[in-house]
Image (cartoon, rainbow, N blue to C red; front, side):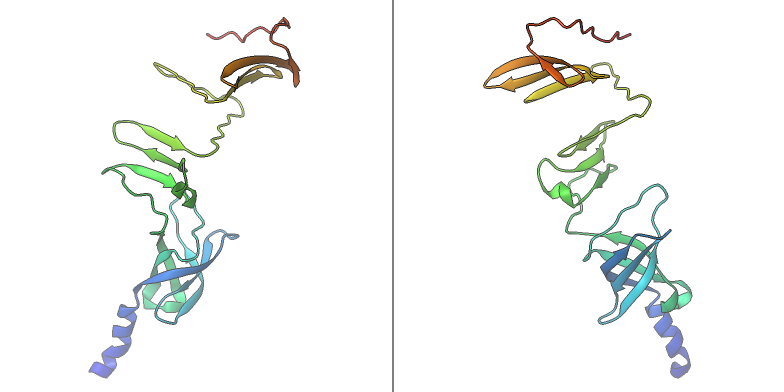
Length: 192
């Protein structure tokens, strides 16, 4: 009886496994990963299922959960990948974050949906674009700059630069910089 049940026991034992990521191919419809599963088992071209609308390319050394569909190692899929080396820690219950390995360095690199309706966005450069419209609105709107604040509308603009402890104002038209004492007829845009 034990001899008859051994293949079934082996299939059940390898149904769900942990693995360590070795390589990622992100070129296809589903990512294909190479992982090291059991002590010396290397599994190649294993499809990784991700949530719709979210995607990532994990780094070698990340940990995976491998599911052998129907108990067959030749029909395996990866259903979860995490990387304890870079995971953002210290969130409160119910909070959600997007992050990368760059979050380890100041000023951080993340988007956190915090409790109390607060959204925190951090990065060395944050570039927001709206091809038709980018709207910032609120009961109060604050813009803070340490060294430079620039506005530009179709090549007409103004820059405030903090140089040697003094704020200096420059206005320009299509890239030409003018002395602040000269009137150039630049009218601020009408704001409703």
